[in-house]
Amino acid sequence: MAKIARDQLDSFLHDGDQAIWSTAALVVALQAVASETHQAAALAVLSASGLDGVTGLGDRDGLASQAAAPIHQVGALLRGEGHMWTTQSDEALLAQGRASAQGAAGFAQFGLPMLTGLQEAFATGARMLDVGTGVAAMAVAYAELFPGLTVVGIDVMPRVLAMAERTVAESSVSDRIILREQDVSSLDDPETYVLAWLPAPFIPEAALGPGVLRVVDALQPGGWLMLGHGKYGGSVMNDAIGRFKTVTYGGTALSDEQAEEMLRSAGLLEVRTVPTPEGAPAITVGRKPTRA
Ligand SMILES: C[S@@+](CC[C@H](N)C(=O)[O-])C[C@H]1O[C@@H](n2cnc3c(N)ncnc32)[C@H](O)[C@@H]1O
Image (cartoon, rainbow, N blue to C red):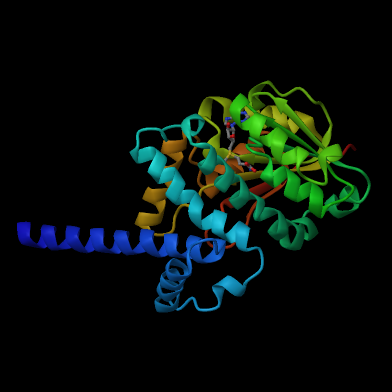
């Protein structure tokens, strides 16, 4: 019995070691700043993983950040710095921000066309709310993709907002991004936004419940709320890791059903959880009723 447990543990550790090092090899290969020997060794790992050619894909920086984000986060957690989002290092915040910015292109391709009325609204100088704007990488990505859009980003962490100011100043869309230190549960912008993004895994439960109501109040009639949350109900391992991450960040774990119930009871219509790619958060959407 003890022997089986030890073998299982050895195999678990081996798989974990390979997963972490091959992800690090992906980051090194995509960043392409290592020495020639180091780069060749990283590429050999990718080749052994069947990922030849991955460095030829577009948006290498975005992919590198997506791969690096969990490594930075667990590094911080194990150093005793990463419990709760507020204690993450600058690197981890930047990597997570760039990773979240990748969602903007998917939204343009799949999300926007399926949300009634939003395409027209986006074309005519609309406002979007980005709750938990972090380093504002996602806010910048949305503003860059949609030239008629102004993004208002709110966050509770002064340190990330200072980083966000720099991201925005270095972008070409600084005239269309507004940053504010504010808790979502005290938002007071009635009927302002056509779209709001609210990432439950990073928002504590005590702020999320009241926050959803404040965000709904802040939507224009016919406006949409996108509630990001974990994906549960797949494998036991996937569910357990999703909850572990959310607890680590101090956020709220919601299943599809709980997210849908939250939006329905806040008075939203057309509530549904939409399909998202593997690795992306689940997204439940709901629309504020239009005026009769
Ligand atoms: C993962 S980060 C967002 C990443 C972001 N999309 C970017 O581009 O950097 C989540 C953010 O939510 C913020 N947050 C947590 N609780 C909040 C609350 N109650 N109101 C507003 N923001 C909050 C955290 O401070 C953190 O910066």
